[in-house]
Length: 148
Image (cartoon, rainbow, N blue to C red; front, side, top):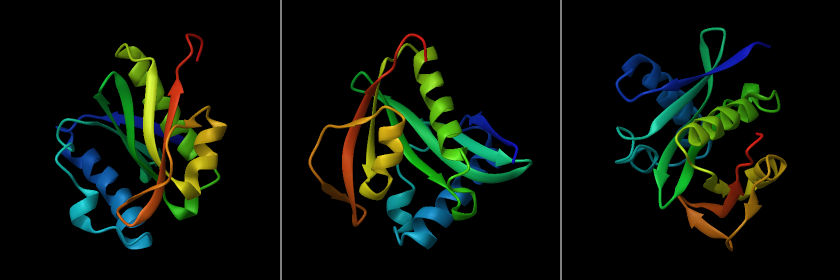
């Protein structure tokens, strides 16, 4: 499988639609998150990332900068492409962009079912369980090393 990740600015409407398409399939259709909760006020200011297999979007995520952190959000991969490395590639692209922008600390709210994935990438749990969009989550953080 040949998956590549592209950074998408909010002005790149076609590619941004690819991100929304993947997010809609994973979060709204698969996990029953309401469309109103899935799309929020940060879409136009966040940096977006889309994983493509050839020209087909198979994963997405976004990055914002807040409170001294690179805030990782909306990481998702189509069910057909989970456990292929696509999620790791998205996270590597997000972390690299944060480092390029001068950030060394990352933060995310992980669905509990995905926390093991983030632990493998070096994130550690920094909160108790809380609900977001009706799904149990944990806050997780990571300090980016100079080498990574």
